[in-house]
Image (cartoon, rainbow, N blue to C red; front, side):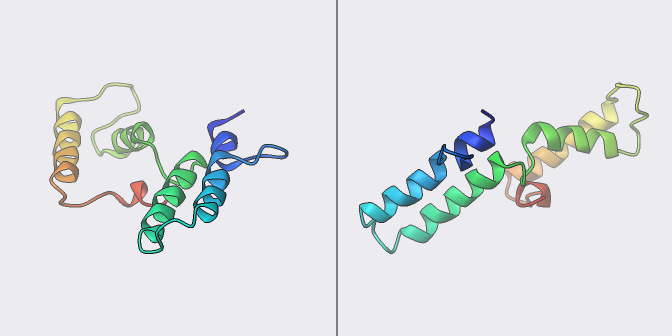
Length: 103
């Protein structure tokens, strides 16, 4: 089974995310906290389904799309520097690339 199938289900296997949804319904979870839980479950579901980039995918895309990259598997000092600057801006909450939200 793939991670997507484990998380979201396939055929006779219901998937962990749908089971959690049913469990939250069953225990009558605090209504005020439910939207946040559902938001997290949606994010995990989308991540497992490949709708949101992984860090590895984003890193490869960043390098491949960099103006200095020549498709030679060489990551120059400039590419590395620009990548670190981008990561630092993410860590400092200066902006999250759209790829991590939805692809």
